Image 1 (cartoon, one colour):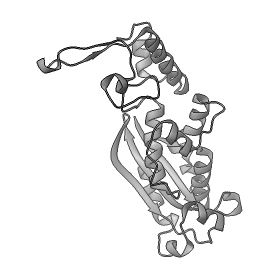
Image 2 (cartoon, helix red, strand yellow):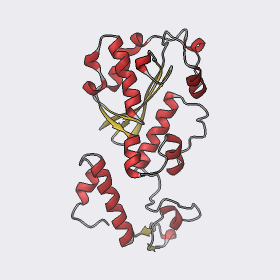
Image 3 (tube, helix red, strand yellow):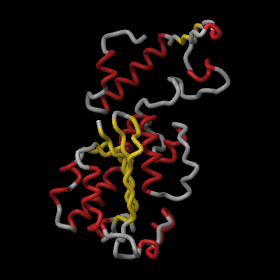
Image 4 (cartoon, helix red, strand yellow):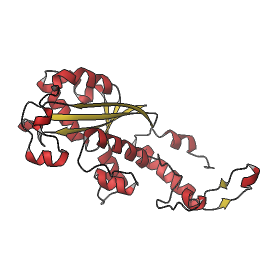
Length: 246
């Protein structure tokens, strides 16, 4: 599966009021792996940027004066995202702006719904964490994603952070942990799993960690949640359905 994690910055909040895209950032994920392939472009919106928007992303009208217009970059952009699943936080905002730009160019046939599928991580987060804050900063804190460089919003930086967050949300943890909080002092804490069985490290054998019944049930419940959210596309759930997980 090819996914494109996407973010935009704009001159304001409402395309119907004439606001435009000023920055696009995308990172590519294939089969749940970041490929290092990205797309990034600043865009001259041919209009002033709202003061409130500048406070959010720090991009000024003067900075964009010599940047290409959307019309100049649209082909490269569409070629990069075409056929992929777009992963966007609060997708209606970004998709609405992209479709607005394409409408202005007379290209409604290239509206996002016609060339891509879309996964909204805000909707996903609200299902997984009902009643909690689910903006990108809150998710970074919840999933221990480093966003220390995010003093201001930036499309490419936010897309990179969202990619890490999305992979963590959907089972891409860098450490085996079903319990959330974990320490780093020893392998017991790093795995977050109970019932460890130690073997002789000096002999060249590896430490074997066995999950408890409660942890196995938590694992199956998480797979079922991912399967439900993805519309039945969780391959791990299908492989383990009706089987014990070892």
